Image 1: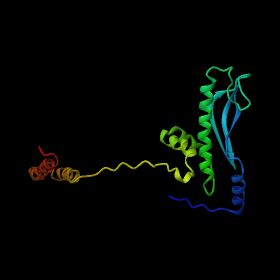
Image 2: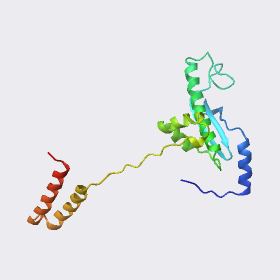
Image 3: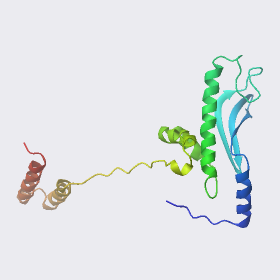
Image 4: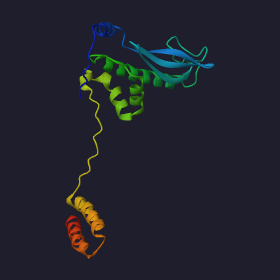
Length: 186
């Protein structure tokens, strides 16, 4: 499936300058009420990604990279989770940068991070040579195969209503029973 996009000269210039820019996210502090939280932040043109790491800023418990230091309990485990999340965001950014017109989308990224399958493929993005090798499988639509019996059952129900369950329906019922016997031999 391809998207056709029309591009102005200004947009092309901004794309070429964006592609030269850094394509890695960074950890940033954002205030919410009285609390300060650490977010994974990235800006591309007008679009901004802000993924909450769910970590609060702790005075004297942070490194310059906004990771926890040894003064915080389980700092290694928490830092690993943040680094893994940042790696997934960076892979998403890298994939988007390889598009003709790179555009990032906060909701799309959040949906990918919630979906385990897509999250797995996003985690594999740095192990493939190009993003073209990374193909996210689309869920196959569930196909219900209708058998002759299914069609005949629908027909029989309509005939039953039409004939008001009179004696004329007995031949239709006999045929339906014969079809069922063919499907379920004893």
